[in-house]
Image (cartoon, rainbow, N blue to C red; front, top):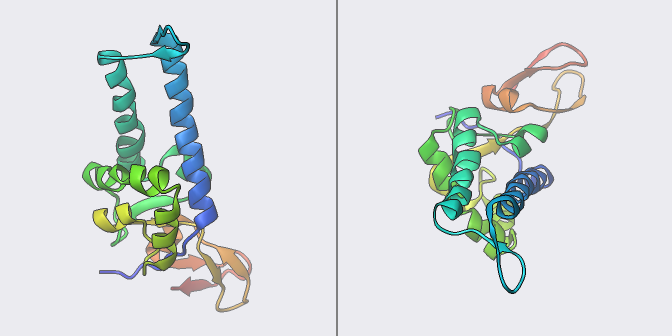
Length: 174
């Protein structure tokens, strides 16, 4: 098993989460107002199969897209990628496992559980990542061993464990 070095990247991860759930909630509100029924006390509601669509879109957007690309839109924007602890692409099952715990890690505890586990786990993993045996890579800061330039690695460079320095052109191994 390769030892892929990760960094917490808390700000990037938080921004990716805000973007992803912002997209999902925007769809949620649009859908309810578009297809919901007005309630007597104000607002709209959906039920039955219409309500099931909202649940289904979570599965499509988070686990399915993440397992297909290794990234959601938020992760793409902040240049993060989810891979197995060995650096391989994640499956739908692994993505579903890590996402099932979003409610606990992000919403019930307001991100405190996620923050604490990312900062204190060996591979900077959330509880969902530990359970699914996944890691989030990209944005790792490194210093070129040759010219000492400070660089930020892409997800691919982190997974491979090497990079070519854009400043001096020399290859670096992690």
